[in-house]
Length: 115
Image 1 (cartoon, rainbow, N blue to C red):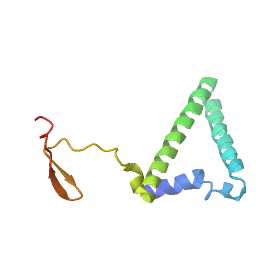
Image 2 (image 1 turned 30 degrees about the vertical axis):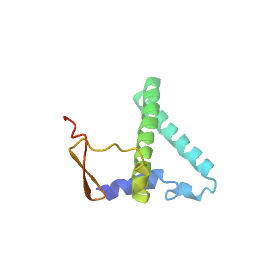
Image 3 (image 1 turned 135 degrees about the horizontal axis):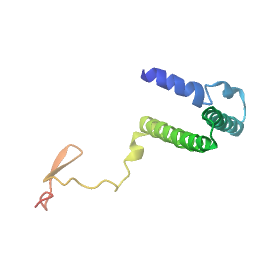
């Protein structure tokens, strides 16, 4: 099932794998894909017979596509560069009475969270 979803996504949205890959300019490919998305919004609006539906479906498409792109980008970043999410000085120490750093147990001199 997951492979079907990935293949379906790549077949439509991945400009390197769908038929738009034959357009040499990346900006042109992106514009063509955007025009297709708006065309589908208009088609749904005409089908349901309301311009309100066009506005709703247009916004829904933008939100849905943005969410999917953001999720895929996050997954790809996690796969290719997992340390990207571990910034130095960002993480706070544990609230437990003991903390583990690089496999070594360190006693918290101040006690735990409720001390």
